[in-house]
Length: 85
Image 1 (tube, helix red, strand yellow):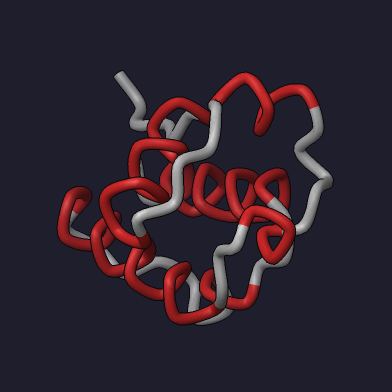
Image 2: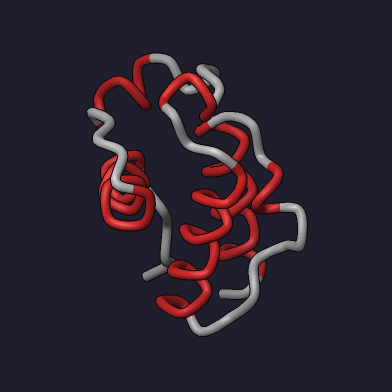
């Protein structure tokens, strides 16, 4: 089975890593809403990247913490996980 990051997991990571509560359904409904609208800054996203790197035991692309939207982040992370599978 290939690892895939879902909107549910991203929502949980935003809560755990940055203390920001975002409904996963909102991330799925409008994945182009910028992270800054949810209150997630680049430092918060960097924390999420670190958590994912620890979870999957491999580095994510260096620009992962510069993603602006949930869709961009999920696509980048999942493409990276697929490539490393």
